[in-house]
Image 1 (cartoon, rainbow, N blue to C red):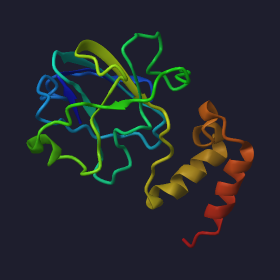
Image 2: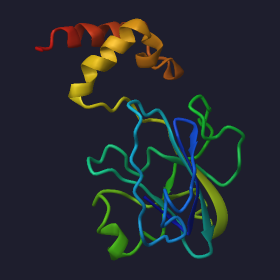
Image 3: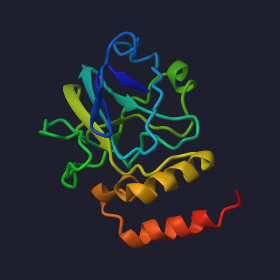
Length: 184
């Protein structure tokens, strides 16, 4: 991931990930991406606060499997809203992210997914703080982890059924039925 000009804040599932040199050594360098290992088994929302200091800016995020990509599934805004990074925050009035005017240089783009896009708020602000969020992310676990997750869900279904996005109980039952049929 990289932010032009500066990564200010990162939130994963509403939790602040400190932007410190030990975690993000390139937070102040837009042309050198940083890597952050997501350790959560369930990803609901990814939120980033960036700062653009003149010229065209934005942010770019990708994972090696292209599960997370900055594209039109993200929303960006230059207006601060309390709780904008939280799982249950209603961003339905936020504008869809715009593809940035400057798509970075070839040295940074070559280190990211070839299908990722630089995004920014719809004004393509030239000197601003901007907030971008993607809350369309869903469960991302490896097949080896599914059985443990299903077992955990039998005892604590709220951990698996994603009540924050309103999935019905039928969805959970369907998943349990499907995974019960999987060979050991």
